Image 1 (cartoon, rainbow, N blue to C red):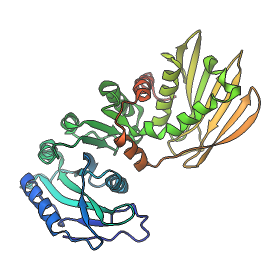
Image 2: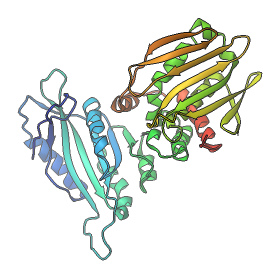
Image 3: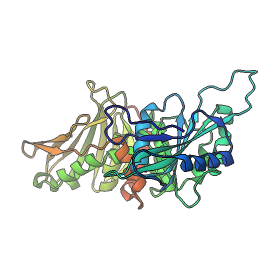
Image 4: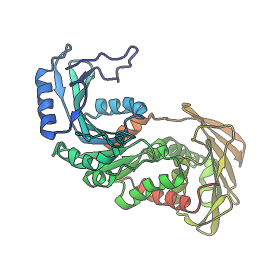
Length: 381
């Protein structure tokens, strides 16, 4: 048994105590449950009572050598939403040829504990680590199923890029909610698999963190059209340009294009050169993606909206990085520059927000298939 103090300079959100034996052992479901029971019996925290809590089963496939950036996010998840957390760590290489493996699937049972708000004890989430080689990956779903807390929802998180585990289909089948992040994908076709999954399952069962990050952009654009100078122009929009950093349009740019088109009732027709053309009531409109050469990070940087007579409009909404404010620049019908709050949300906050969501998200249901359809017409503007 071990207790680990928080790292120096901790902000209070980091785990205060880690429980469990060191090292991995061959997987045995009954042995893991016995180990967990023994761990709770012997745990003796130095600061008040220790509470064992779980609101959900959370399953997270991870590559064993690349998971470090996600560790703080998963720690924050257990702090704000105590869960039985399954970390499915996949070794990148199979054993050398001719080397016998008596235990293709290894396991470790631990707990991650955080101080209760205001003090007065620790709240602990059980954490079960399963480590498999590529050849043992088909064993993982049944191992997870044998350890699920039966009366709790099952949430499947996929947060580490393009690799779809061999066991993904079986894990998805047991999940009540699949939560992914299309922004971690390397290309638009891979991003579109997330949006097609949402279209197939509905947002009550499939969600995208990249959509959650767009909330400040959607709020800003809605606010633009509350301005007297713009309210009459919404029915006459003819041109939208999304400016982005990085080598190709990021997931957020595709999703925002899908949101604009779905909210305004535009129907995708085709692509001509760098512009995606839509049919709108009484007119044709276009959405284009334009790369900003001086921006290296793959982020949405600005949205430009233009309409013609009888209500001319030319407005640019811009935001950079993690700035707490954005600019809204009206070029027409009159020149005006505004500064508006940009409610940037950290990754962990977006993740927790979607886990706490219990109702379908109609706007995402409408936007996701349009974003996928745009990429199907070609993703290199």
